[in-house]
Length: 294
Image (cartoon, rainbow, N blue to C red):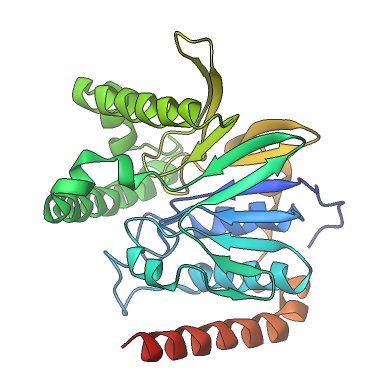
């Protein structure tokens, strides 16, 4: 790996990785993670896509992301895991803590005197609340679209024409999708203002954003969405009192790591022993918790 100084944001929020599916951009995510050393890392839902999970498909690059996150734990990073709708089975472990790792349905942070409310967002999705079977069916269709998109992109890149995103174009242009996104943002910001939060931070809808909202009572809130690592390759970072939207495609340092060979970096190899131990301990704790619950 090239020698460089890692950035040290106070908080990083990533969501909708969908590890275990064809569309997950795990290699790019790992490149990004290698360039930062956050004090707090929030995994804001849909990290491992249990809905679409297939034991025959969990590539090495996807496992490397999990290993790298556990290595951050061993280096002192606080890691919160907020389950989303695609990894909702982990919600029964709400309150589980081990070292610097914690599972929670929501996270409240005090950032320089301002209150931040962090949650995945599916609880405000009408489709999720009332027709979960329909949402899962939509998930299958979305995954099929991603598979098709992956094949088309492979050909497109070979021809030098760059990548395309079918689902992103659909969401950006179909009126019903735009209305859904607007309704989602309005709902969560109204509730956040009622609760006097300064920041409301979500994932779920795969639409990265930082927007200010204000109501008739002149209450205001900053709405932030971390986007995803399927199409947008985005994250949220908080540094020196300010939020910013990270975009992988605008990061020459992270993109330069794509030139490395496919072998694990020396840094990752050194952390591998610790991360395996942490991961094994976590699995054992989950199994014991599940046994006690049953």
